[in-house]
Amino acid sequence: MNECIFDIDPKLLSLASEAENECREMFEKIDSNAEYNGQKVLKAFIDNRVSEVCLKGTTGYGYGDMGRDTIDKVFAQALGGEDALVRHTFVNGTHALSTALFGVLRSGDTMLACTGKPYDTLEEIIGIRGEKGNGSLIDFGVKYEQVDLVDEMYPDYDEIANKAVGAKIAYIQRSRGYSLRPSLTVEIIGKIAETAKKANPDIIVMVDNCYGEFVERKEPLSVGADIIIGSLIKNPGGGIASTGGYICGRADLVEKCADRLTCVGMGKEVGCSLNQNREMLLGFFLAPQVVASALKTSVFACRFFEKLGYKTLPESGETRTDIIASILLENEENLVAFCQGIQKGSPVDSYVTPEAWDMPGYDSKVIMAAGAFTMGASIELSADAPIRPPFAAWLQGGITYPTGKAGVMLAAQEMYNKGLLRI
Ligand SMILES: *Cc1c(COP(=O)(O)O)cnc(C)c1O
Image (tube, rainbow, N blue to C red; front, side, top):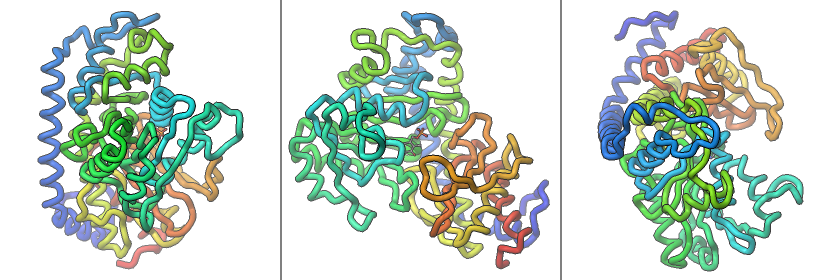
């Protein structure tokens, strides 16, 4: 058993040690993917001749920003696209997704959501929630159709084929967001893309790739997706990028998105990088390894809490396609103690006690634990939970495995201190 600096009950320590041993096989797979993806990223740096000049940024208009343009090429190569738009001016993942949707869709086009209702923040962008007249896609004359998952679990291929006819975009969400459906593997994304394109060869397959980057060896662009979108304070920022997002894929589509982000006719040519280039390059370089740390933290947390008697989604032994896990903690007391324990194990604001509160936009109270270097960064160890059945904590991140593991053990210890654990 490893020596532990923290005051963790010996029974918990021994369970943690057993759990870790039982994760060995999973860890080996994670390491082997990280090695492969690390090489992929290194090769993209080498092939695109990243130089010291690229680490420096520009001001003003940002004409001829070599760093910015090189970052686009590095992302494109490593993620398997023709081109990319990687910008710190994307305020979050939602903004990048919104830019991609408004960039590609025109009045009269149909957006087909192939994997059920998209992530919560997309609802107002599409126009299926919120006021009329606020500038949503529907406001601009875009039509919206949705194919729900069968049993809230599996893609409905027949319905996707039916509805793809006449649609402009087939939209796929890889990670499950705040639902309890399984996340979609790259293989399944490929099947959806194939189904949609068989029915409509012109359809554009767009994937919300949030939380998925570098978890598998392939990204959706190599199995038929045309454009993928993600956030830099999740996987591809490697815990270093302070903000931003990316859009990557077919060059003609990336160009449309750039015109939407800046101005028609200026697109990718403008937008100074200030001093974000070094952070973005370093973060992307570290990302495969950081994602591996987050995955190990997640797999360990699932195994450990399974041993403590709780159900987790996915189960500890299941193959991953994103870094998210839900731990079903059965009641509010457990959930609150768990999140408070995660906060106690955070490098920043460890002394703060998170409480459940009525957050705008949610229909139940929410508690969030996040002691991160970057505000809201969920590649760093964090947990959040709506206070409602099945009282699941969504756990993600961990930029190093040893500290992620410690945070998870401290969460269990907090539950134990409050008399909530049966061991
Ligand atoms: C995080 C996430 C987003 C974007 O969320 P932001 O908080 O705006 O970055 C979109 N879709 C999914 C599935 C996500 O996990």
